[in-house]
Length: 111
Length: 120
Image (cartoon, rainbow over all chains, first blue to last red; front, side, top):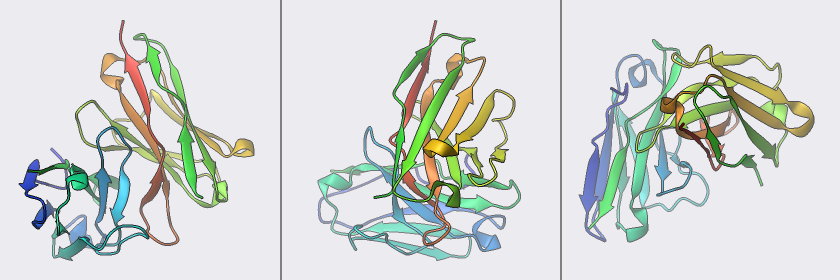
């Protein structure tokens, strides 16, 4: 059971918009810690997609966006493309565990 | 560019030990902490802990004390993860990841991962 809760899977057709939720608690998001998002393509290492709730590293398309409200965060992907098919993980720090924690991951399928 | 390159896959028998390396390049090694993350087959990411690359002081997450040791060789900008008394359930891909405390305040970049397979 992950401290950060994500849906196991989401899907969408090419060109559509999908969102992935990440639910935290008062000991992580509620305590002021940011959410970060990683994309893991099949057979590769995780790659930073969004940092500090809503910031994109250089090279990440603006089709990807992040937001945070209270103890919940979300990742939105617009103009879905086949190459977006991957696992997505949210990430933050938990003060009650004194540990970095990950969501369980969400598998995005492009139909 | 900033890069972390890990050692290759390992096949080990139960009870053996393994040492995974993570070589950094493109930045000053001692300025950024190094984290270790485990990913069991078909599973999610699990934070194992981190090592202060300036002092060498390791911090282990719950569940990763005792058989897991983080170490450094700063002369070659390399961090190590050693796992002793290997069990089949240690089979996983192990990643190192730099903690970026200047811009993103998170793990970036990551090494390519090292598969450790434990089987008799």
